[in-house]
Every structure is written in structure tokens, then in C-alpha cells.
Image 1 (cartoon, helix red, strand yellow):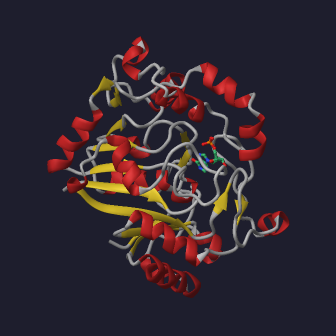
Image 2: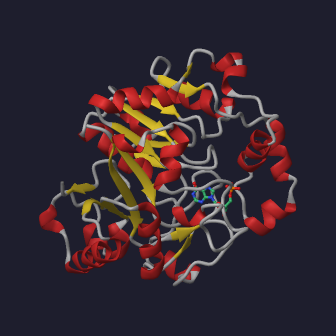
Length: 335
Ligand code: IMP
């Protein structure tokens, strides 16, 4: 056993949360841990009873009742967002937060909302993450261990993830996407406030690389981008609406800009940064509507098969999961 690090190849919103939930349930993972920047992320999963779950702070692995969920020390924590998710999902008793996480305070959110550069130029989610990280770096942030409301959850998550990974499966759920990385994007300032590669995700949670079994890179069949910055092969909004493939941000509700195809050079670059051993190809139904809701490998259509071959060629890793719709079970597991 060991850790599976789940990261996004491009600009995020690719269904990492659903992939993490699927693996937690299917592989009965005892622990899922959030990596990535913080509450600027938004994962959504539709459960089989139709309930839509949206999470910004905790990994979606909680959907498996036997999975404990944790937040690594490199992830920014907003105590109000965390409390809301613990209450909404009924998670008291199986949540761990590293005491060293820096806190997002209301003032950080207000400062970002009032910052025209962030709001208008960068297209930030203005959820206080960059401002909180700035205070952390300047060594004046409060940490999770300074907040009494978080006391029931506080522990050394780095020690816990390494202990559990020695004998069991740990899912490390990254956030954002490699091309939004602060130091690896060629599109600064159209980036987020930290790096979003597999190495960064390991670092966010303190996972020793020797305990990493797989890096599962999530590739969205038709990539999207929210906020500003270039998006190759961007489709006109009317075409997105006409084809019924429109998407809206979980955190901000903003429409996501959508590409008509993958940029193969960028995908290769993302694979170089992340070193994936496995690929999850998501939103296949947006490439071929005939795939919507399919759960069996026999249902894979010619256009999707062609895309799988191309993605495997460009990333050097096998496609092991195919996502075919918004529901948790709309997934073909090829492992
Ligand atoms: P910030 O990280 O909220 O400051 O946002 C900076 C840029 O990263 C903006 O373009 C956001 O839309 C984008 N971004 C931040 N988090 C996510 C995410 O989880 N998914 C997709 N885009 C994100």
C-alpha cells in the first residue's frame, strides 16, 4: 500500500474530487488528505441519490463512511468554511487538521475583494487564500493550533499520513491544476498563490515520496478555465451553450471558459511536471454525448477510444478511469 497523489494536469475543475470519492469508496481508503492551496478550490460530486455535494476545504473521500479526512499543513484553512462542511456532511469525529495550517481570516477575504488587481486583472476567487499565504510567509499568520474552535481536529497530519501509508491506502487530493502553479505557469500573474504539481501536493501534506505508490493525473477531455489568462482552442460561448456542455464554478458561480480540444504540448508539459503513473480522463461525455452515464468498458465509443490513445501517448501513462457524467457512479474503472 501507499499513497495515491491525485492532481490536475491543466487549469483545475477536472473532477479530482469525484475521482477521490470514487477511489475512497472502491478501494476502501482509510484516509484521504487535502493538498493544494486552500478554500479557493471547489469540488462537486453528485451522489447516487441525486444529492449534489460541494466541498472547498475537505477532501471528498468522506463520501466513503470508513474514510477519515484530513487537511495537510501546507493548505490554508478557513475555520468558517471548515465548520460548515463538518456540519453539512456530518463529519465530526473523523476530521483531522494539521495544527500548523495557516488560517484565512475574514480580513484576508475582505482585502482580496477590495483589490482590483486580484479581482479584475487576475480573476481571483477572492476567497482570502493569497492574502493568508502572504501573512504566513511574513510569519504573522495565526495557525490552526491558535484557534480554539479547531482544537477537536488538530493533530500532526504529516505524521498521520506517513504512518497510515505504511500499511494502508492514503489518497492525497490536490487542488487547482499544474498550469495554475505560481512558479510553473508561463502566464503569471494569471496563476493561483502556490504550486499545484504532484511534488507540491506531497509537500503540502508532508508525504514522504518513498511512500507514494501512484501519481494519478486527472485530464479533463475538454479543458476549462475560470478567471483570466489564455485558453487554447477556446470555444465561443454560444457553441458551449448549444452543445449543452456549459459549466459554472463551484466557488464563484462564474461560467467556465471551455476549450474545444486538448492542447497536446501543454498536456505533455503537465506530464513532465507531474510524472503520472495513471490517468483519469474526465468529462468524456462532453466529447461524445453517447458516453453519458456509461459504466462499462464495452460502451467506449470510437472518438473516446481515439482520445484515450492520444492522451496515453502524450502523457506516457495508462488511462485507468473514464468519467462519463456528473454522478459518482458514472465512471468506467479500467484497473
Ligand atoms: P485565486 O487562487 O483564488 O487567487 O485565483 C487565481 C486564479 O486561479 C484565478 O484565475 C482562479 O479562477 C484560479 N483558480 C483558483 N482556484 C481554482 C480552482 O480550484 N479551480 C480552477 N481555477 C482556480
